[in-house]
Image (cartoon, rainbow, N blue to C red; front, side):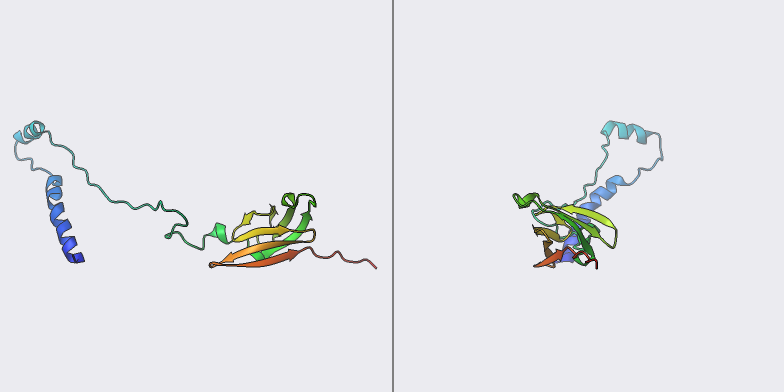
Length: 149
């Protein structure tokens, strides 16, 4: 069926509903009594509503939501690393977003926007960056302390 035929059929199906919702004429006093006798029921119109309940990412949601984009890898500065040699999974890295001045404490496996902490070593942190369906590895290192003369 074409779209015009479907629209025409829907309009024909809706005509009885439109006729029921039009106000009755008040020419005589007998009209209210007739309405009481027939038990005039209120008509309800149903509207079809779509909600997405599928698995995975909602295809209608924006890919560029503010919470998912920040922090950018280029805006992060590594401040400190608390490395646990016996249990590397308990190591913590302290980062600062230089654009917003927000501080983050992360452990291996944690996610910051599109960045996932892959590994924490004594002097650097390795991230897995996810951009547009591709993944790449980036590393932030502690700056070397300045030598005094």
